[in-house]
Length: 270
Image 1 (cartoon, one colour):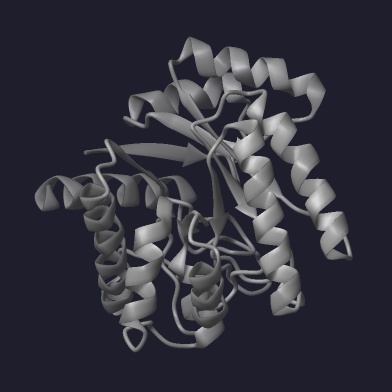
Image 2 (cartoon, rainbow, N blue to C red):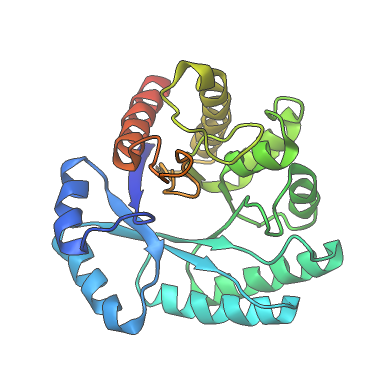
């Protein structure tokens, strides 16, 4: 099994034409971002082809009701599938859905996924259906084919603790994971100010234990590839200094450091 690293475009302010060669030089295999509006879609696809990048499409369902979110999912999935992505990463539904509504949404989303023929990873994300470990476990019990993007930084924030008290849920999620967002959260937020800082070492190492569970499960499942995006974000995810709004860290350096560290982590495990 190989590890493929994808660079997100969240917080990127440079034109794609100047930033893509920098991403290529850093050794990434692909790009993760939402499907652009039609005017920019061909531009993105041409650049992906030029730099031999693969594509992970992000979609974020919208609406007030489960039905509206499902209609949004269908529309965005159709647009994403037309871009030939490796997979689609989805922020799915709302945390306010009842459990029966969540089951119905995910079941119908799976039907659409099968129809479109593109794998969909539903992200463990705050504000969405999979916003905490326990609702996620119950849905996985009821919908065995559900696939996940594991971004445990959200759960650390929501639960206000590291997740070593729910190892069986983390292990169950690993068996459903097809993608990882390698951001490091802490008890009071979804992103530590700097994962390189010694005061956040235990948070980094906890997340790495959970990602290792994903890799081990993927290997046991016979997957040939594992995909990972070091998805640290810009302000307001990134901490800033009061009054000046100056970022406390360099987003590019953090993402590249995390990519390099997890490439090495994966190779040592393999």
